[in-house]
Amino acid sequence: MPKDRNSNEPSEEVVAFDVQGERVVGTLRLATGKPQPVILLFPGFGGVRDELQIPSQGKGIFAYIAGSFASLGFSSLRIDFRGSGESDGLFENTTYSSQIADGIAAMEFLRSDPRVDGHRIFLLGWSQGGLVAAAIGGRTNRPSGIALWAAIGEPSVSFPALIGRETYLRGLAEESNPTEIVMPWGARLKLRHPFFQEVATHDPFDEIKAYDGPLFVAEGSLDTAIPAGTGRKFVSAHNGDNELRISPMDHAFNTSRGTEALDALVMVTANFFALRPAFLKRT
Image (cartoon, rainbow, N blue to C red; front, side, top):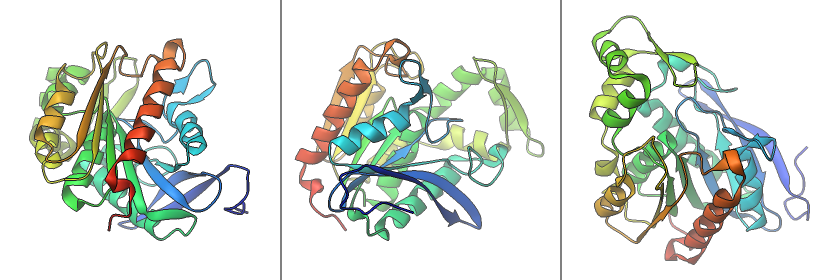
């Protein structure tokens, strides 16, 4: 049973909602006290809602920051996109479009939950999750603020570099059967043609142009997964209040060595959200 929202104890529970007839599963972490603003967390490519484990903590990056944000007065919802984790569907059918649809549905879910302030919904996307957050912002213009952490801005550059250009071109050409890809760490996944098509055509910088709410962008100077300067391109494309933070961190925020960089990033992100006019109710 969910804890009373006015309890002094933090509350975390598994929740679910439907998107196009399939179930999306997430974990809702409630900050204490009255219904608080809520941050919707989007994982990266192939990630699940708790995200990559932090060795020093024994928990995933998103599970960890959910607690950190709760201590700063923000509830959060982290989700498994369809085809990943506990959500319905096959990973091979995932596309940017399906993940964007999941994210928009998650916003609607939060708007209807009386335990959070559904009029103050912020988005935080890491890596490919940042691409998703940027698109949702541009297509709805409803988030009270968006944080892009090491976000993918040029998928047609980053994704072929991740899986190999030959594999990428094979996926573009194969229209009937899924294409197997091998990740740098050895994991094997399958993806269908629509995903590769969207990699070739999707433009996150163009998406963010239509969003005029506050935008926080974090880029690591040690990040080899995205091209240097991606963060600056996001803020240059954005027509609104924004902030770019460049720090000496890798794509996973140096979490293989501890949480110092991640903790600092959580703090500046929370401060950015809290101090902006969009912290007031945005319809």
